[in-house]
Image 1 (tube, rainbow, N blue to C red):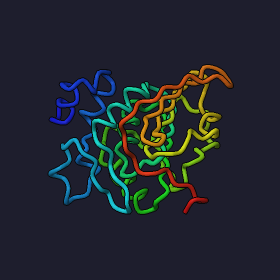
Image 2: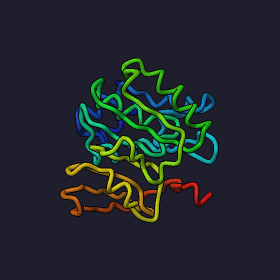
Image 3: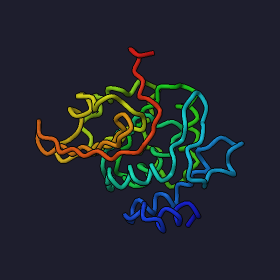
Amino acid sequence: MNRLTNDLMKDGYLRTTSIIEAFANVDRINFVLPELELDANADVPLPVGYGQTISQPTTVAIMMELLDPRENQKILDIGSGSGWTTSLLAYIVGENGKVISLERIKELSDFGRKNIRKIKKIGKEVVELYNMDGSLGYAPRAPYDRILVSASAREVPQELKDQLKIGGKLVMPVHNYLHYLEKRGENDFYEEEYPGFSFVPLISRGSL
Protein backbone atom coordinates (compact mmCIF):
# COMPACT_ATOMS: atom_id res chain seq x y z
CA MET A 1 0.00 0.00 0.00
CA ASN A 2 1.38 3.45 -0.90
CA ARG A 3 2.26 6.11 1.66
CA LEU A 4 -0.52 8.45 0.56
CA THR A 5 -3.19 5.83 1.19
CA ASN A 6 -1.71 4.97 4.57
CA ASP A 7 -1.66 8.64 5.59
CA LEU A 8 -5.28 9.18 4.51
CA MET A 9 -6.36 6.10 6.46
CA LYS A 10 -4.39 7.12 9.55
CA ASP A 11 -5.95 10.59 9.49
CA GLY A 12 -9.45 9.12 9.17
CA TYR A 13 -10.28 10.34 5.66
CA LEU A 14 -10.38 6.88 4.10
CA ARG A 15 -12.66 4.38 5.84
CA THR A 16 -14.42 2.26 3.22
CA THR A 17 -12.60 -0.89 2.09
CA SER A 18 -13.36 -0.54 -1.62
CA ILE A 19 -12.23 3.10 -1.66
CA ILE A 20 -9.06 2.25 0.27
CA GLU A 21 -8.26 -0.48 -2.26
CA ALA A 22 -8.81 1.97 -5.12
CA PHE A 23 -6.43 4.53 -3.61
CA ALA A 24 -3.85 1.79 -3.01
CA ASN A 25 -4.02 0.49 -6.59
CA VAL A 26 -4.54 3.74 -8.52
CA ASP A 27 -1.40 5.66 -7.60
CA ARG A 28 -1.64 9.45 -7.97
CA ILE A 29 1.85 9.56 -9.48
CA ASN A 30 0.33 8.28 -12.74
CA PHE A 31 -1.83 11.40 -13.07
CA VAL A 32 0.55 14.29 -12.38
CA LEU A 33 2.91 16.08 -14.74
CA PRO A 34 6.36 14.41 -15.02
CA GLU A 35 8.11 17.33 -13.36
CA LEU A 36 5.80 17.01 -10.32
CA GLU A 37 6.10 13.26 -9.72
CA LEU A 38 8.17 13.81 -6.56
CA ASP A 39 5.19 15.74 -5.14
CA ALA A 40 2.57 13.13 -6.06
CA ASN A 41 2.14 11.93 -2.47
CA ALA A 42 1.91 15.44 -1.03
CA ASP A 43 -1.52 16.37 0.33
CA VAL A 44 -1.85 19.43 -1.90
CA PRO A 45 -3.50 20.20 -5.25
CA LEU A 46 -1.04 20.17 -8.13
CA PRO A 47 -1.24 21.97 -11.50
CA VAL A 48 -1.91 19.84 -14.57
CA GLY A 49 -1.86 22.71 -17.05
CA TYR A 50 -4.48 24.92 -18.70
CA GLY A 51 -5.34 26.57 -15.38
CA GLN A 52 -6.53 23.28 -13.89
CA THR A 53 -5.35 21.14 -10.98
CA ILE A 54 -5.43 17.58 -9.73
CA SER A 55 -7.30 17.93 -6.45
CA GLN A 56 -5.80 17.60 -3.00
CA PRO A 57 -5.90 13.92 -1.94
CA THR A 58 -7.72 14.71 1.31
CA THR A 59 -10.47 16.44 -0.68
CA VAL A 60 -10.76 13.53 -3.12
CA ALA A 61 -10.98 11.07 -0.22
CA ILE A 62 -13.76 13.08 1.43
CA MET A 63 -15.67 13.32 -1.86
CA MET A 64 -15.33 9.60 -2.51
CA GLU A 65 -16.51 8.66 0.98
CA LEU A 66 -19.55 10.94 0.59
CA LEU A 67 -20.30 9.63 -2.89
CA ASP A 68 -20.20 6.00 -1.72
CA PRO A 69 -19.44 4.42 -5.14
CA ARG A 70 -20.10 0.69 -5.40
CA GLU A 71 -19.39 -2.25 -7.65
CA ASN A 72 -21.41 -2.53 -10.90
CA GLN A 73 -22.70 1.05 -10.74
CA LYS A 74 -22.86 3.58 -13.58
CA ILE A 75 -21.17 6.83 -12.54
CA LEU A 76 -20.82 10.23 -14.20
CA ASP A 77 -17.51 12.00 -13.50
CA ILE A 78 -17.55 15.67 -14.56
CA GLY A 79 -14.33 17.65 -14.83
CA SER A 80 -12.14 14.55 -14.89
CA GLY A 81 -8.92 16.46 -15.66
CA SER A 82 -5.88 14.18 -15.61
CA GLY A 83 -8.06 11.10 -14.99
CA TRP A 84 -7.39 10.28 -11.33
CA THR A 85 -10.99 10.42 -10.07
CA THR A 86 -12.22 8.54 -13.13
CA SER A 87 -9.68 5.79 -12.50
CA LEU A 88 -10.54 5.54 -8.80
CA LEU A 89 -14.21 5.20 -9.68
CA ALA A 90 -13.53 2.73 -12.48
CA TYR A 91 -11.49 0.54 -10.14
CA ILE A 92 -14.39 0.50 -7.66
CA VAL A 93 -17.24 -0.22 -10.12
CA GLY A 94 -15.27 -3.08 -11.67
CA GLU A 95 -15.60 -4.77 -15.05
CA ASN A 96 -19.41 -4.80 -14.98
CA GLY A 97 -19.70 -1.12 -14.04
CA LYS A 98 -19.35 2.01 -16.16
CA VAL A 99 -17.79 5.43 -15.65
CA ILE A 100 -18.76 8.23 -18.03
CA SER A 101 -15.97 10.81 -17.84
CA LEU A 102 -16.35 14.38 -19.17
CA GLU A 103 -13.53 16.90 -19.65
CA ARG A 104 -14.00 20.08 -21.71
CA ILE A 105 -10.29 20.85 -22.36
CA LYS A 106 -9.11 18.61 -25.20
CA GLU A 107 -5.46 18.51 -24.12
CA LEU A 108 -6.47 17.45 -20.61
CA SER A 109 -8.95 14.92 -21.99
CA ASP A 110 -6.14 13.38 -24.06
CA PHE A 111 -3.79 13.44 -21.05
CA GLY A 112 -6.42 11.80 -18.87
CA ARG A 113 -7.13 9.09 -21.45
CA LYS A 114 -3.41 8.23 -21.61
CA ASN A 115 -3.13 8.15 -17.82
CA ILE A 116 -6.18 5.93 -17.34
CA ARG A 117 -4.61 3.36 -19.66
CA LYS A 118 -1.65 3.06 -17.28
CA ILE A 119 -3.89 1.33 -14.70
CA LYS A 120 -3.87 -2.28 -15.88
CA LYS A 121 -6.58 -3.36 -13.44
CA ILE A 122 -9.17 -1.15 -15.17
CA GLY A 123 -10.96 -2.91 -18.04
CA LYS A 124 -10.94 -1.14 -21.40
CA GLU A 125 -14.73 -1.16 -21.59
CA VAL A 126 -15.34 0.37 -18.17
CA VAL A 127 -14.52 4.02 -18.97
CA GLU A 128 -16.12 6.20 -21.63
CA LEU A 129 -14.23 9.50 -21.82
CA TYR A 130 -15.70 12.45 -23.73
CA ASN A 131 -14.07 15.77 -24.55
CA MET A 132 -17.06 18.03 -23.94
CA ASP A 133 -18.70 20.62 -21.72
CA GLY A 134 -20.00 18.68 -18.73
CA SER A 135 -21.82 21.50 -16.95
CA LEU A 136 -25.20 19.98 -17.85
CA GLY A 137 -24.16 16.36 -17.48
CA TYR A 138 -24.54 13.77 -20.22
CA ALA A 139 -28.17 12.81 -20.82
CA PRO A 140 -27.59 10.07 -23.43
CA ARG A 141 -26.19 7.69 -20.78
CA ALA A 142 -28.49 8.72 -17.91
CA PRO A 143 -29.71 7.81 -15.38
CA TYR A 144 -26.68 7.45 -13.11
CA ASP A 145 -26.22 5.78 -9.75
CA ARG A 146 -23.67 8.43 -8.75
CA ILE A 147 -22.51 11.81 -10.08
CA LEU A 148 -19.20 13.36 -9.08
CA VAL A 149 -18.33 16.94 -10.08
CA SER A 150 -14.83 18.29 -9.45
CA ALA A 151 -15.43 21.95 -10.30
CA SER A 152 -17.42 24.59 -8.44
CA ALA A 153 -20.79 25.94 -9.58
CA ARG A 154 -23.23 28.53 -8.20
CA GLU A 155 -25.84 25.79 -7.64
CA VAL A 156 -26.51 22.17 -8.49
CA PRO A 157 -27.82 22.20 -12.09
CA GLN A 158 -31.33 20.81 -12.46
CA GLU A 159 -30.06 18.71 -15.36
CA LEU A 160 -27.79 16.78 -13.00
CA LYS A 161 -30.65 16.17 -10.59
CA ASP A 162 -32.75 14.87 -13.48
CA GLN A 163 -29.97 12.51 -14.60
CA LEU A 164 -29.61 10.91 -11.16
CA LYS A 165 -31.45 7.67 -10.39
CA ILE A 166 -33.85 7.58 -7.48
CA GLY A 167 -31.64 6.43 -4.64
CA GLY A 168 -28.61 7.94 -6.36
CA LYS A 169 -26.08 10.32 -4.84
CA LEU A 170 -24.31 13.43 -6.13
CA VAL A 171 -21.26 15.21 -4.72
CA MET A 172 -20.03 18.54 -6.07
CA PRO A 173 -18.62 21.88 -4.93
CA VAL A 174 -21.04 24.80 -4.73
CA HIS A 175 -19.16 28.04 -4.06
CA ASN A 176 -16.75 27.03 -1.26
CA TYR A 177 -18.99 24.27 0.08
CA LEU A 178 -18.94 20.59 -0.74
CA HIS A 179 -22.54 19.75 -1.60
CA TYR A 180 -24.02 16.29 -0.99
CA LEU A 181 -27.34 15.40 -2.60
CA GLU A 182 -29.36 12.20 -2.39
CA LYS A 183 -32.35 11.66 -4.68
CA ARG A 184 -35.10 10.05 -2.60
CA GLY A 185 -37.96 10.58 -5.04
CA GLU A 186 -38.58 12.18 -8.42
CA ASN A 187 -38.70 15.62 -6.81
CA ASP A 188 -37.49 14.73 -3.32
CA PHE A 189 -33.86 15.54 -2.51
CA TYR A 190 -31.94 15.31 0.73
CA GLU A 191 -29.04 17.78 0.79
CA GLU A 192 -26.12 18.67 3.06
CA GLU A 193 -23.24 21.16 2.76
CA TYR A 194 -19.70 20.94 4.11
CA PRO A 195 -17.71 24.22 4.24
CA GLY A 196 -14.03 24.94 3.76
CA PHE A 197 -13.21 23.80 0.22
CA SER A 198 -11.82 25.52 -2.86
CA PHE A 199 -12.17 24.31 -6.46
CA VAL A 200 -11.66 25.60 -9.97
CA PRO A 201 -14.97 26.85 -11.49
CA LEU A 202 -17.31 24.66 -13.51
CA ILE A 203 -17.31 26.39 -16.90
CA SER A 204 -19.97 25.95 -19.54
CA ARG A 205 -19.70 26.88 -23.21
CA GLY A 206 -21.96 29.86 -22.58
CA SER A 207 -19.64 31.32 -19.98
CA LEU A 208 -16.42 31.08 -22.03
